[in-house]
Length: 399
Ligand SMILES: Cc1cc2nc3c(=O)[nH]c(=O)nc-3n(C[C@H](O)[C@H](O)[C@H](O)COP(=O)(O)OP(=O)(O)OC[C@H]3O[C@@H](n4cnc5c(N)ncnc54)[C@H](O)[C@@H]3O)c2cc1C
Image (cartoon, rainbow, N blue to C red; front, side, top):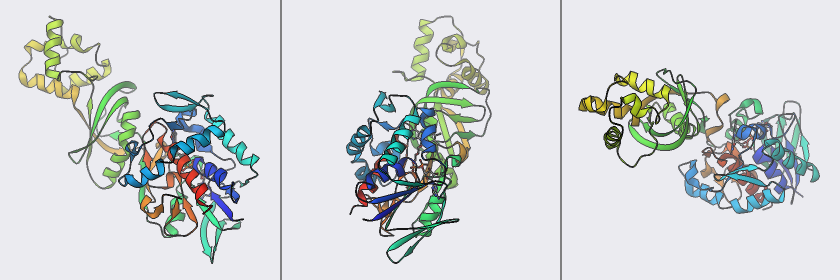
């Protein structure tokens, strides 16, 4: 029987170990004193572990046919999660455990590891992997293990206090893999101007421009901080911002503060002004746009809230409309990995056989989860990718 060592007992590593244990002797080596620390903090402690629409268009990846092949295994994986007794509560397509507790997911997975007599070595931080003839030698500071096959499941660089401190990238790169520079993803953005709208949470439309070219649109929850943007729709654009800024490009987000309307904004104002005759601009807008946001819009557009639409010059009307529907925010940076939910970049899928997750560079080495250059949007996509890629590798080692 082959001896398989899984490096990293997080989301992808636990599933990989469970599947691999059906055909091989499996050891998990984990740098922490517990498995699945990051699982516990996902989805604000509720663990949004899956989505009803697992397709490549919810991921930022250029080579989506490879990702498509991986994701095509999603039904098998969801069935496997069910078989482990993970039952979902589904809200708008987002899957959470019925318990509403991420803890239950970690416990179910880890208890299954124990039931299957998989050996887990805690506080075993892998520092190097070498290959001696057909065997892998797994080194930690004080120890050494031999394996026939290795599944590398060390996670990315986000929230390093959970154990994923980026060492997996170094291990893979040292073995000859190409590494697309890891950068923070699903991360708050830092803007060049401070506005007095700290703490506002609204629904808005965000359009991302990279060096002047439109390169993304998201509609949904936005959180405004003094000099930053967060919330689901901003987070979903943040990976592209990270990459652009790292490449020396400019990033600007334009915010549409109006909920979707059928008319263009100019026509909307004309109609509303007729309906609400003798009302100030503030009165036309105050039930539509958050007060703090409205204050900022009036201040930057230099239009007084007590002015009336019918008295505004054409130029001022257009200025007001552009700040409501197209408010420009220059992004100068992102927060660090310590506030990022995922990593953009990693080992390219082109270096992996996506039918088994085996490396094309090193035989019998499998790479899974956030270590790969695949990052999903908010909504359960990153964990889904971790489970699916781990599952495929766990089956792949039987080849
Ligand atoms: C705050 C937060 C909230 C999130 N919420 C969600 C969510 O709701 N839904 C979602 O889909 N995704 C969410 N994510 C992302 C998701 O948690 C990750 O994408 C996923 O956990 C990646 O799985 P992984 O197995 O690749 O890595 P991890 O789960 O990070 O596991 C890697 C494991 O490897 C171990 N390790 C690392 N290096 C070594 C080494 N050298 N030797 C030994 N062990 C090592 C680590 O200690 C860790 O246990 C969230 C992330 C964060 C930070």
